[in-house]
Image 1 (cartoon, rainbow over the protein chains, first blue to last red):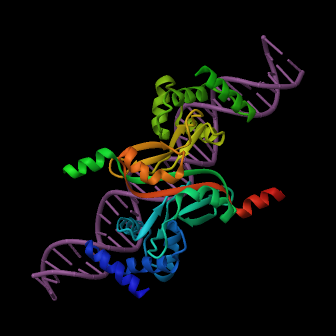
Image 2 (tube, each protein chain N blue to C red; image 1 turned 180 degrees about the vertical axis):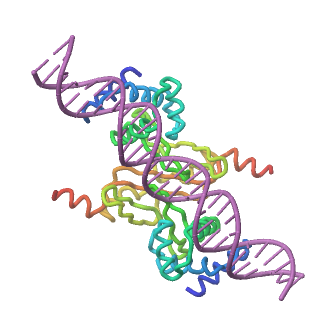
Image 3 (cartoon, each protein chain N blue to C red; image 1 turned 30 degrees about the vertical axis):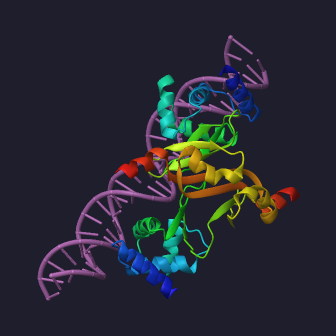
Length: 149
Length: 149
DNA sequence: AATAATTTAGAAATAATTACTATTAAATAT
DNA sequence: ATATTTAATAGTAATTATTTCTAAATTATT
């Protein structure tokens, strides 16, 4: 934990950000709950337990920065708020199974894309109705243009 | 077009909804722009061209209904509004390539999941940085419970 | 310690979406 | 065809997640 915080401090510092007590507290909560997807508001309430003076805007501001620095992942589900989770280096890149009924979110990791869809149903007893796959990156024009610039 | 509208009329009717002039106008715009992802607001402005009295709330209300009936797909990207597109039966189930730079959204269809990630870069000259895969369906507990019910 | 630059709390503003209300249109029964 | 019931609408107000703004506080630097 202390080491992890140091790592983040270094990372922040390299990008001209300081490890303020507020940032420290937010990171502490995220680390202690690295299995959890937080809404900004849930995180706010959790951080308030160790720092009653924290402001909601501070949570948002820093989640944005943490997201830039790849300290947290910003997740978009079909809800009307965003979810945030700590990026866990020890954990494989993972995806989500979202229950249309109870909204539970299960995770699975990606090794072999091919066998996924079929295996999922068995391994997780998850009945797939639909799936969305999104790739983020740079399109032809954009990476060509950025080479020029 | 007229046939398609008839099909939607039947579908609405089967679900105790009427094909009102407003719904007709919205569908008309969606059909004429089936390649397009609309925001509620863009759609609103487009429908206003053929029906100046249409209300924004009507757009939202009906997009919700159309989404239930699988007439449109509600899409969530990393933007702060939702995108809607007509479900095109003739079109294969498709996914999206989202440019982090210009936000252009390219489409690709899914045949063979395995070869995707590698092929994508070649076929679309798209430089993938990250991807998200989401499966929607029912988790173990939920489909078990619904069998009991 | 004095100065400059960040960061913060808290409030106000924004913007997408939803809920509400009175009115209109449509469907059904008479 | 007309009266009655029901569904759908326009327009507005309310809601809610998120952003922006501002003055005060903190931190780093000299």
